[in-house]
Every structure is written in structure tokens, then in C-alpha cells.
Image (cartoon, rainbow, N blue to C red; front, top):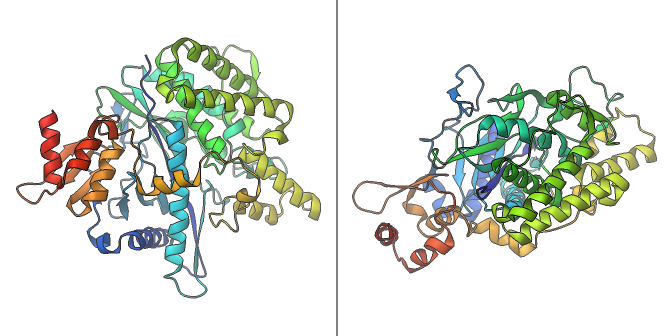
Length: 502
């Protein structure tokens, strides 16, 4: 039986300091520090540090350490904040990045992604209050600077360690290549060397131009469709963390929910070995660009068995396999029946709309919403495909200033309520170990020396520092430790209660 698909999203935001020559690393640091100062000025200088002891980004899921590869650098000297909602807010490769806390399902992941957006808006407001007149910090939830540089929106999924990694690679790849039909954020032109704007005036995905390998460890050079980083941040004997770098940063809540939800479902099918290999692509790397460069959704892809299928046909096949699976097994691995059925229903709705009337799902699909705005601008003003104003429209779609963001004017469907976002900004989800981390940070922040995903280092006021391992993502929940937390007046009392429960 497939395990619960604990998931999360890491989003690197594009940053621009307008009116100054400030470098992006400094700008990102100022941004995060301004947010932390505005929310807890008394704790700013004593905020818990991120614990890097367990960071091993060069361990490959294929069973070796690839020293010759270009794994992510562990940038220990840059700003790294741990938030009371269980999230991590830090500078990564010259970008501010928010990693959501561990979430028990796609619905929670969406809520905390929305909370991350609001944290960015609050950060902008906080830092801009400190800047001189004429200087402004601007942030964008996109994936490319338009000059050949890409930054990521990565997803993470908990999968069982005993599933052969080769099976995961071969069977998840068709979904990663084709899910952009509903999860692509859209882009004006191409940043692929040798591809002109006349050849590709508009494409589905912001990221498709940047993938060069089918499988590999790198995330910034020679990017692979399936990333092999084996850094589980939990019990390595039982679990692995599938680190997904192929996706776009979505403004559409429906797209974010489906991106995470459908992938959780497909991974469940793979774990239970019922997906099969009949959707294997012959050339995944070229196929990901074929799909992205074809807004008509009509181009066929060569399959490994010599047949041809469109991206839409592959997605329909995956949906039907998922329907058969949940009919037999149920929705336990993806959050239960209500959430699981919503994934299925929205998946079917968006594919039906894309097939029969793409404009009908402009409220769900970023690339369609953006393309309508771009096409309207181009038509009204008679602009050529390469006109810089179209690139500006592309960028403004992702503007995190609410009054400037074109996505907010595009009529995108809203799934998450404002009160849910407001709660998620301050508090961790109840359903994962993030709850315990968040409780410690909320109630005893001055005693949390350092934190990471799978441990806390605590100073209880006497004796040596206490290291609390959290190797099970679904332990430390409100159901399991909530009463102990609420009944403990001190951190030492809480740890004593936890010890007595073992």
C-alpha cells in the first residue's frame, strides 16, 4: 500500500532592487531580515539558526555519491530563518526562497504556498519602508529572468525507500513531461540557444528551455527531468524524498493544487506497481520542449514502443489509470476522499476544457490566462512577436505587488480562503512533524538553538544542549503531541513528557 504523500514546495522568487546597484544576494538578505525584524524585533538577533549538520546534497539516489556533478551548494553563510509556521525562509543562489513546511497532502501544500506568497508581500512592504526615496525592492513569482537564467520552484514528495528508483524514474517521467499542459506558467519567446521568438512566440512552460538530461543530480546546470538527490530529511531506511525540479511557479491556485495532487497520485500508483510502462517516451528531453512549444496541444510525441501520442492523450491515460486505482484502493495516500476526489475532478475538468475549449479553463491554467493577455496586447497595438512590451507583460503577470500583478486581474479561480492563509502564515500544519517544530518556535523561541527538517537543538536552561530527532514526517502532529504541548509550561517539562511517552 502506498504511503501518505507528505509534500512541500520550495519557491525561489525573482528579485529586483530598482533605483540602486545593490546585488541580489544583499537585496535578498535585506528582504528577509526586514520581514523577521517587523514580526519579532526582540528576537531578531537571537533567532534560531538553520542546522546544516545533515545536509548531503551530493548523495545520488542511484546509489553513489557523485562528486563530479554540480550539486547545490550549501550556503551556510547566508541568511537562513526558521518561521513559526514550520517553513524555511532563506537566501538561495541570490534569490529569496521560501520552503513550505511538510504538508500531509496537496491541499495543505497549496495553503502554505499561498502563505508564502503573502509572506513575500509583507517582506516587500517591510523592506521598502527602510529604503531611501527612489529605491524599491520588487519580487516576482516566476522562473526566468529572460536572459537565459532560470530559478526554481521545486516540489518534494515522500516515497517509500523500497520502491526501485529506476521504476520511479521511468514511470514518473511521462507525467513530468506532459503535466505542463495544465501546470505551465507560460512564457513569451524561448531562451533555448538557436530558437528565435519567431519560431516560438509563446510557450507553455517557463522551465522547459532549461532541461538537458533525463535523469541526474544537478539542479542549476545540465538540469535533469528527474532529479536524483537522495537527501530524505527523515528515516533513510524507510523513506526517500523525491525532489522535483521540473515544475513552474504557478500563480493559479488550481494549477498548484493539481501539480502537487496529480503527482502524489501518480507516485502512489508507482509505489503500488500498477501504473505500468506503456506510456514511456522515446526521447523525454526533446519531448518536454515539444510539448511546451505547442500551445495547440496537437503535436504527437514518439513513444518507446514506436507509437505516437499527444501530451493530452498521455494525461488522459494517466487520469484514467488514477481513477481505476482509487476505485480499487481509495484515497488514503493523498489525503482522503474529499481531497483525493477534488484532485480527480479538477484534473478531469481541466483536461476536458483544454481539449474542447482552452479559453474555458483560463481561470485554472496560467499559460492560457497569460496568453490571452499577451495576445490582446499584441493585437491592440500591432506588436511583433519580439516586441519588448510583450516580455514586460509576461513579467508583470508574476509581479508580487497586488496592485501591479496581472495574474490578479486575470480572473483566476480561488480555492483557498483568506483566513486559511492568515493562519498558515503564523502556524504550522497540525498534521505533520512541522506542528512540533512550530510549537517550539512559537512558545520557546529563545530556547531553540537551531532547527532543520528532521531535528531541533534545544537549550533547556541546564545541562548540555538537547537534540530532538524528528525522523518520522507524520509524528509530532497535533493529535500526537498537541495536548502535551498545551499542558507544558516550560520546554523542559515538554521534553520530560515526551520522554515519558516513549
